[in-house]
Length: 159
View 1 (cartoon, rainbow, N blue to C red):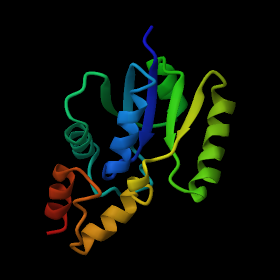
View 2: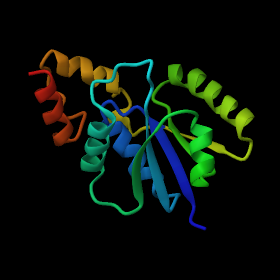
View 3: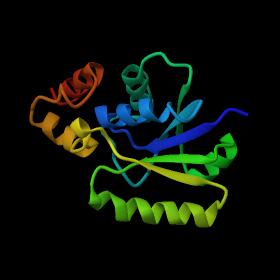
């Protein structure tokens, strides 16, 4: 059985930090499922299908990466996909406490799952989707923070 991992998030939009983690994750797993979380309590900038298309564009053609959306608990998706490893990114110390609580809850719900924390590359440490949206909203330059297709989608959305 191939070594598969799951990387979940809202990806609204996908940033260079996300794509960095996706590419580096593939060095220790054979296949990565990028799972777009659909949270009915939030109002995203892009629809799930738009986010899926932007992720595919940013990652490029790679048979090792599967992109899909999901509702509900991540542990349920992991069980459905027979995935045993969850990838989570930690940009700063502030992320750690929140991510640690999620990892502990996931372990409580599914002890067979392991959470692997990855730190971003130095040039993407400060990049977050919410920051990118805010800069784009005010017509700031996000070209160094996201894939060109994502930058174009943001410009179109805020035009």
